[in-house]
Image (cartoon, rainbow, N blue to C red; front, side, top):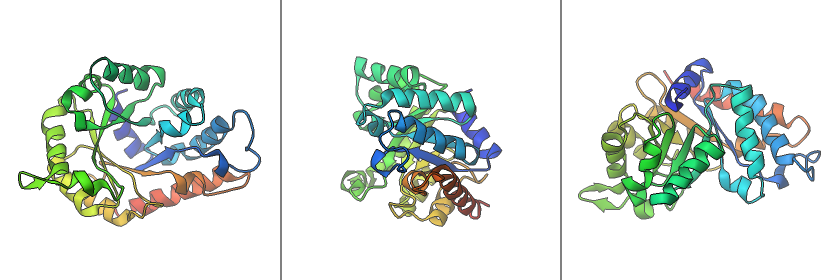
Length: 271
């Protein structure tokens, strides 16, 4: 199943716009998991199993795994999602961006080694840096547009010919790069007005929206400014607020409750 097809079905089937981020930090794991040789997989797989029916996607952050030398756990987790929860797409949050053979190797890494359904990319090297990803019509290509961090304004808001750079990025991707209909954009929840501008520029193109929760993004503003006419079009990402909702042996149930509360909060503003 293509990424966009899977995403559409998950939006509808799970009645959810929640993207569960997987950012393992062993120091925050419950005490009974700390020090266990396969703690990263045990923790993340428990979160996955507890929240899969409440999510439209999962988003493992590759640096969190690589820093722990846990790339093998990441491979097994993505395989676990595909086997146990088929139809819920996996976004590899890697923010890759390079040219030539290096770009092609990044394609192999994301889609062959890890088996991800989509990957986040940095578009600022231009189209040739992402073309090998765009050519994979079955996979999602999620490009940075206006990110959630305070420093986003340093470059992304620069005036270029009378409008900010991020608007040029949004238009170019939606108009010129999205020939296979497999593009999405990263737009931060902390910038709701810019989110609205991006939605106007790109039409139905999906938006991955980080910044809810710990970064201070407002759910109502994100949904109001970012949803499509059908009440979908968003992957609203939450990591820490779900992953570390509980500190005891019932951590997975606490994560489920946090995910359900976020889903229900989002759904109140969708219609």
